Length: 209
Image 1: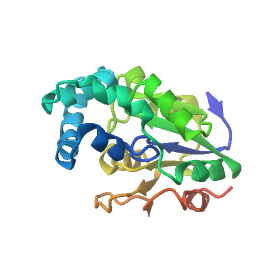
Image 2 (image 1 turned 120 degrees about the vertical axis):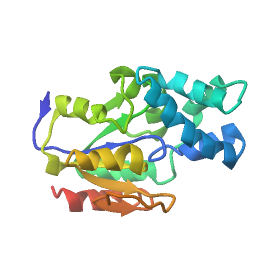
Image 3 (image 1 turned 180 degrees about the vertical axis):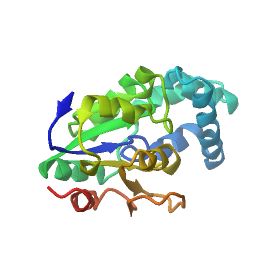
């Protein structure tokens, strides 16, 4: 177990760091299919938490009537980070923040996406290796087992209120909701931002050095 008084920011990846909706919309071809995909995917994940994310995407696409369901998985590694992500994460690292990803995905996908982001992460925990999908708490529990950091020096950052803000809040963590789409939801996050541009300052406000 890693211990010490470092400050840690954990992140969801897809939708928070990588332009998930943009990639899916291009792959699916319409906003209607994108909306339906967002409804179907959590159902597939909940049915079998041991299913790989590649299989989740393929099955969700099949239920939407897409013949080549595996096409989504083939395209995912090419999806790009949001424009502000690299500079924001580099700034956070320069201030001493340790970065980790907690993702509902597979190891090869997250490795490809971290390479596109181009900023080092100390740790990445993925669903296919722990047999659990957020909003279940196992991602955080695995993080807590590996990293001994006080709650007041750990901030979770994510776009999904359902998958991330709700469970992280229940675990007593401070949260930053990257609310790119102007959504609403309870419980309220500790902070809310439209993107990551002001994230380094916000992290420092929540957990001063």
